Length: 365
Image (cartoon, rainbow, N blue to C red; front, side, top):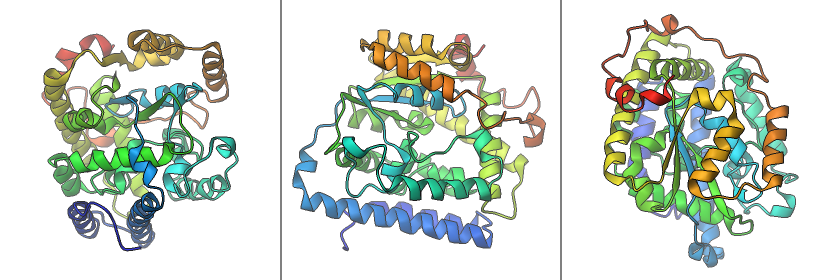
């Protein structure tokens, strides 16, 4: 196999490798992990392109308008994603099938596929490299996976910045035309649904908010759920997550540098998202605050279904309620963090997020 499909991904690959070498301060383990990540993404791309040649009907698959959850990270996106994924009418990309997509998953063996166990083992290594990660962000082979992992095989993705300190790469990625990236994203969904379809996809990743013009060009009738939270709190929580992850791959982790960068980076993302939404919004956005989600997630779910005209079946509601029982918020321990550890004070970032606070004030308390 030598065909990678659209060759535009190579620019991102080169910029990523440059940042990994020059910025990430990788440890020996970190260099091995980064090498594996890059090679794995390349192999995944090769194999998907090759598989589509063997099954040309995949290219004719229609991706129905999905539900897409976005917004600042650490604002309740994950719990909404996991809850909506419980609906039998919905299809979400599980970590195992995103990491090992050949052959496409079958509905009959979706929860017993032989690929689940090795992916579970690989994910368990992340907790060993970055102790405490589970209390910050749950990992699991059968849990729904974010779109950043799908976009990683096009090499313009925040996935790499979550794991390694790559400010120049992330700044570059924020300026890119994402048309090819979202075209690749859709081709991966075509691939995953060829043998296992549902009524609609449920997808999630916070960075989608920065690329709304490209996201909606690819999925013009998507239903978008935008979650909100006091931005300094959200950024501090995310800086805690990235510091924990970076610590598994680098010997030089500076929480203050990480915190200040994440504040500037997500301020840019929010401004882009707000500007693009003002131009593109046709009534397909549902806004919700983090505190509402924490207070009663099922009330929020029902509001989402009502807003978009979806039917919440008794079976779906039962599965969601059961999921909340077996996966409470602090299942793996409470995530504790202090803004002072990241160089923040109560007055920090006021100017960075002032427009966002004014626009979405009612969702922030």
